[in-house]
Length: 359
Image 1: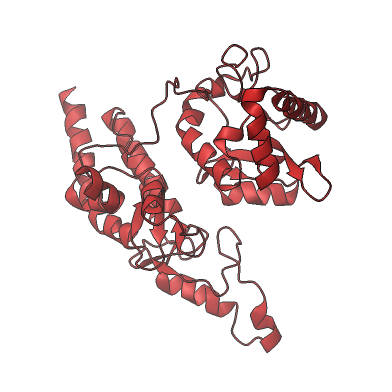
Image 2 (image 1 turned 90 degrees about the horizontal axis):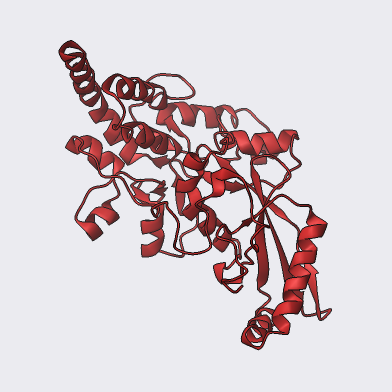
C-alpha cells in the first residue's frame, strides 16, 4: 500500500508506543483517501469493516505488536482497535499473548507453548510464514498492511529477512528431506505431501486429525480441508514436532547428532508415569500421554464428586488447559515412531562409535 520509493525493505516498524502508532494509522487513512489510486481501497475497507494495520516491535523485549484501525459504520468514523502482542514460542511458533507482561497469566500462556524463544536472525526467519498465516487468520489481510518508510523500520537483526517483497533470503516453510529408515520416515512425514510431491519429507508443523489420529503438515491439511478448526477437528502434535527437530539435525557432527537424538527419550515418555509410552494419545493441548495414565488422571478428577463438581474444569497435566469433554486422540504417528525408535537409535549409536574409531 506504499510506493516503492518510500517503502523500507523490512516490513516491521521499530519500537514505538501505541499513541505514535495510532498517529501513523490515522495519517495513512487520510493519505490514501487523497490518492486516486488508493481511494477505492479505503472505500472497500469502509464497506466491509476490514483493518488497516501494521506490525511494530513491542516495547516488551522479544515480542511483536500488531495495531490496526477500522471503520465503524454506526459512528461513521475510523476507530483504533486494541493492540495485539505476539511472541515466538518453542513449541507452537508465533502465538498471541495479550496478557500483562510479567503477570502469572502471561507466563502461563508462554510456558504452555514451550517458553519464549530468544530472537536471533537464525531462529526467527523460518517462522515468518507462521506469523503471516496467524495474522491472516485473525483478520489481518496482507494487502491491508502498512509498511514502514526507510528509517522507520526495526533495526533488530532477527527480522532482517522479514521483508516487504519476495526478496527474503529465507526459503518458504518447506519440509526437510533426509535419508531415514522407512518406519521413522512414515511416522514423521505427511501422507498428503508425499502423495502430492512423490517424496516423503519431514513435517515442520505437524497436526493430528481428531477423526483418524493421523498426523499431517498443517498447511497441507488446511489446503485439503480449509474449514477444519484447531481444537475441535485437529490438535497440534507438540512432542512429534520436537522429535522431528531432533531427527532433522543430521547435519551435525556424529557425536553432536547422537547427543541430540538422546533427548528423544524424554519426549517418548509419559509425562504422568514417566515410562515409555506404548499407546500414546493426544490431548487438545498438543501433549501426548499413555492412554491408561491420562484416562486415570481424568477419572481422578471426576470420581466421588458431587454432581455439581463434575462440571468443573479438568486440567491437562502439562498445560492446565481444560480438557473436560474433549476427545483423547490416538497418536498414530508417535506410536509408529516409538516402535521404530530403538533400532534407529542403536544404528546411529553404532555409526557414531565407528566414526570415532576411524577418526
